[in-house]
Amino acid sequence: MTAPVLQLDAVSVGYGEAPVVTDADLTVAAGELVVLLGENGSGKSTLVKGVLGLATVTTGTVSLFGEPAGPAGRRRVGYVPQRTNVGGGIPVTVREVVASGRVARRPWFVPPSQADRDAVTAALKAVRLGDRAADVLAALSGGQQRRALIARALAAAPDLLVMDEPTAGVDAANVELLAESIERWKGDGLTLLVVAHGTGPLGPLVDRAVVMRRGRIDYDGPLSGSVASEHDAHVAEDHPDPERPPFALPDEPRWA
Image (cartoon, rainbow, N blue to C red; front, top):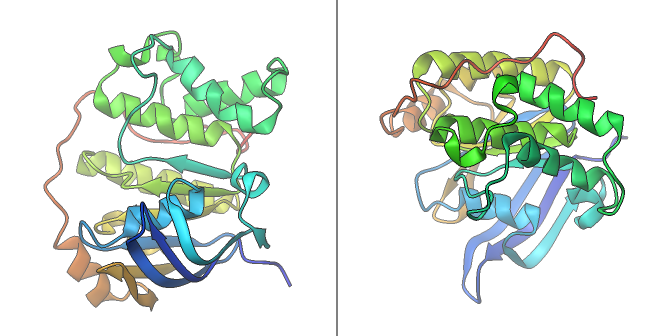
């Protein structure tokens, strides 16, 4: 029997002594797309950060790929954060940002291989930033910077991709194209955990919905019409980025 990609048992997560998420049980199987729904402040992002080691798990256990969560398991997880905060004022190029996603695949002191370079090129092509690879990240629009973060996660060839609000600020047409890309990723066997306020066109691709309220998992099951409608009604108005081209994957096989 194949171990779950992700398993939480009675997990509480916080940033200090007071937990933000309490007593969470969650299992994500290989190849699933699980959407984590809830209003602002419900604990969605905190739960994800606990999985990634970015927030403190105060009680319970987190397992990745059948083992207690640790550096080895987390190297197999790609993460696209909700907010762009890359470079810290240093004029890094888009390619350098995306290439940083490959560091988890090799010791830091080993020079990039041809496979590393090919993976970076494929990831840039996947998000339609191939022509901006040499540009300084800060010169890109907010939407383009977000796509660079997606490419960084893809370059690492993850077995689990965690995306925090990937449709935030994206116009309806590009959300549809993002859904098409996610469908391809699923077809390639990628497991996805997507944090969102609502599902929109991602709905038909969702295997399971997990709803959080006040730091607890309130529902875990099929994405019924009532669940989707309730949370889609809370989605804020989009703030389209007119410079943001469609999300799409290249025709080549998934990761190099």
